[in-house]
Image 1: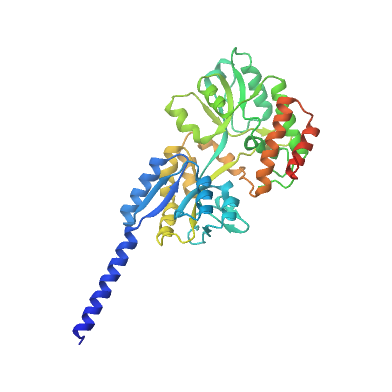
Image 2: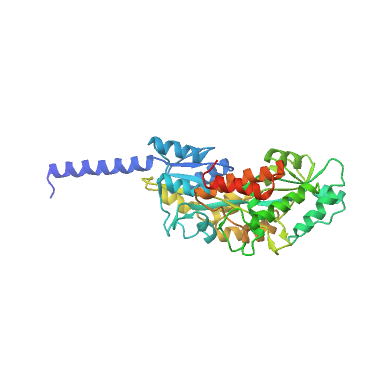
Amino acid sequence: MFSKKDKIIFIFLLIIFILATTVSYASPITLWVSWEGKKSYQDIINRFEEKTHIKVNIVYVPKILQKLKTISKAGGKLPDIALIRDSYVDDIERLDVASPIDKEVSKEASERGKFAFTYKDRLYALPFYFDTQVVYYNPILFKKAGISFPDINWTIKDLETYAKRLKSIKGIIPFGWGGYSPYYFAGFEYSFRKDCVKCMARERFFTSATEKAILLYKKFIKEGIGVSLDRNAILSGFKKGKIGIIIFGTFTIPDFLKDNIAFGILPLPINDMTGVRIPSYLDYKGFILFKGAHKEALTLLKFLSKKEVQLEFCKPLYKFPDNDEALSQVFKDEPYLSGLKVTVETGITAPKGAIYDRYNKALSNVLKLILSKDVPINKAFEVGRKYLQGQK
């Protein structure tokens, strides 16, 4: 038999245990999200809370990397989980704030997604979804110009032919794209490399492939079939029916549908000179787990890796889920995305590291020098290489 004193001690310890458990579950997981889908995240988290009785506090953060850097350097409190872009991984590594994603949590992730978030042999985030670059065309203008609707195996020569026909329509820009953007340029550059489909990261800078891609850009401009535009001008012109063909991200599909914009979608064309399709960037988003995170944070990450969860988020937003089974379902069900399987199969992810960030800045300057100021390519490359070497 327990003495009265032992019973009191036992009851006291039991009360402490119950209170500790209650406090643990009462303290919510803090989840930072960004980009599109704010309501969709909330719907998914509501279902998670109903299923697990674990509370989650969602915070929408527009400039998520900037805020993470600021709080980390100030020694402030970071969230338990945050959504990041794959190109942020090297920044996250330098901040030294993330816990590695283990095999149990990532077992439903695709190899493609794990590659996107792996840096220095460590998986920094659980892949969730990606957008990519595609070609949008105006079917009304195509019909007016007498152009038959292209198929997925179209080529750069086809692009030039269509653009020349569209040029005959008064007041129309045949082809608009971000000519100074490294993000757009990367695919054109890669397509001049025989091994571009297998290559997932630049090995050298300002090569013959870079030069050939720039010469193609110059040809578009010289022949009056292509105009380099900023992001807002591309969207505005296409929505107003003033641009026949654009290259842009799939994330804008819901916006076009909401505004009843006439459009068709194609993968980027095949480069006739190499036989290689211009690869699109797969713009990945995934969740990082911070050191000292809530003990139930892993439960939430496993939930977010599920096929049905990723489909629930991606389908209404016309995004590509990372989970391979979910992705196959999207290709089967979504008419606007069904023809883009080849885009995913040949897609590339952003190379990581400070040198690539520096190269992108150098490349943007080089493109401006050549395309807007007509600086010779070799002279512009010298400027770019000096910038890479840290010279002004």
